[in-house]
Amino acid sequence: MTATQERSTRSGEKLLGRVAFVTGGTRGIGAAICRSLAKQGADVAAGYSANQERAEMFAQDFAGAYPESHVSVHRGDIANPDDCRRTIAEVIEQHGRLDILVNNAGTTADRTVLKMTDDDWRRVIDVNLSGAFYLSQAALRHMLERGSGRIVMVSSVIGEMGGIGQSNYSSAKAGLLGLTKTLAREAAHQVQRAGHSDGIGVTVNAITPGYTATEMLDSVPEKVLDGLRTKIPVGRLGEPDEVARVVHFLAADASAYITGQVWGINGGLDM
Image (tube, rainbow, N blue to C red):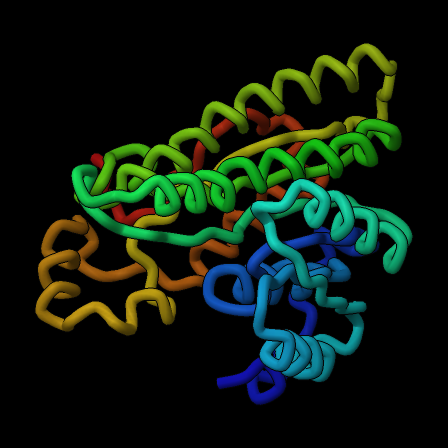
């Protein structure tokens, strides 16, 4: 079902007047995050890497479903530092500001350690970890000047537990947790040093989704999915909207006292 068919409307005003940039925002968990933010009143910029036709269709559907939300799409290679800085600048130029950055874009190249190539390792680290750094660095400059902002890293339960054939992915996603805590400390320090006292502040948090029902799992055999479900205490896969709900909570002004934290959304898989 497309966003237009859903005909969703605003359900709250927690993010009214805010601008959010969601990387990998035109599909899966990223698209769900975009919808959740728009429902709370945010204008949304969605990043994508290659499929321009799909991105334009997403923007058209999104604009029809959320007419009160100004939407834009931005193409770039998240592994490229210049592309990361350019897209942040584009969002600020088109929307006039940037309040929320959601580092959601990611990629996989699963192979066991003995079969993993140098390119497999580098590409996943560059996209999933380095790209989040480049984007956050550019966004923080803007946010710290204004004394307010939210950054949410989309890590993974695999970054906490590891996964066979995923040494590159788990390393990158674990790296996001250290990056989150360091950026949170630095941002809080800079806000205090600058004397900003509006209470909104600049916070950086991470979420760690578990196995979530998106198109990334479409190629996984049902027998394998059944095996995964048996490992999850609640007995099912997560829904993208369940992940998105936590992001819009962390993005709200009222969440100013939450920073440097890791929020698990995995049905109890890591207990």
